Image (cartoon, rainbow, N blue to C red):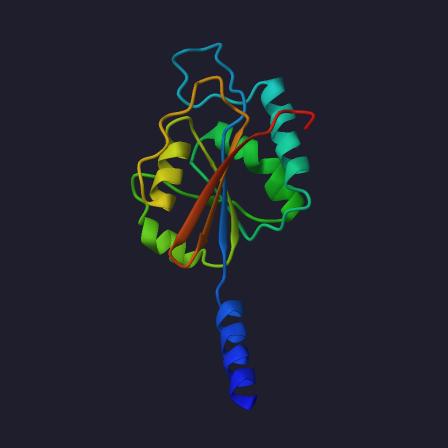
Length: 165
């Protein structure tokens, strides 16, 4: 009986030492398209509403870190969440990111990542280690990708989060 208890204790400690990492990935909210030559536009009023909605959505979800690309629209999208959570966003570049180091440095954490129609699914693909998702539709501002990593087990879920949900 004593051996069984020790074995049970060992497995319990082993399981509790495993930490799940959870990554929430969103595309920036609706951007101003009035100047086709502007590569770094601001959000529209609908985009600001969506950014505020993301803050409401993440209100009850604990976050440890927030990452954004270095564009006005992605920074504006996560600003209400970062203000609510009192987390200073970190700038990332998908092209310069060492994905293994990124995953390692965020082990056991919950992380929000704001990107674009191409970088968001690309980042998901890097996190899950396969080329599963293609670029998002240019009108898709409400998809939320949730990637969970526990040891070598990876899962991904895609949700559609509309304003009012």
